[in-house]
Image (cartoon, rainbow, N blue to C red; front, top):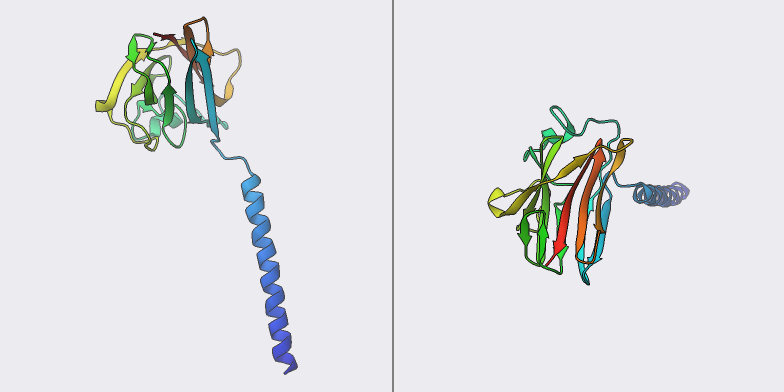
Length: 188
């Protein structure tokens, strides 16, 4: 009888210890930073809001662009999802011109053509809500050449920036590794 009681008590103690350990590990795992955390950028131009939701990957010692780079291993290469994980979501409350592309107000996905790491094209795509590696060129609203510059130091964490440059104008920047790509935005 004592042995059975002792066995039940030991089993209960083991169950409590296991539960505490698992709970602690779950808390530790959730406290760790995601490899490509969610990020957003937004701006108000001419009283209208433009916003982008994306995931921000880090370089972490890897080559990102060019032959043999991380992006070249994506199945849609040379088209890049302009972030990580889910496709990069773009919303505009206004009709726009992004470079030379007329963009009606609404929701879109942003991609970038990066075959030549020093000459990018921004792609505005009409398909929305898809995973980042799902790309359908037939859904492209348009493509526009971006202006390329080099940062003064390598950029570890990918960043997209929407900014206002005037009452009805703005700019979109894509910054990562040794590249900064920009394109002008005009609110109609």
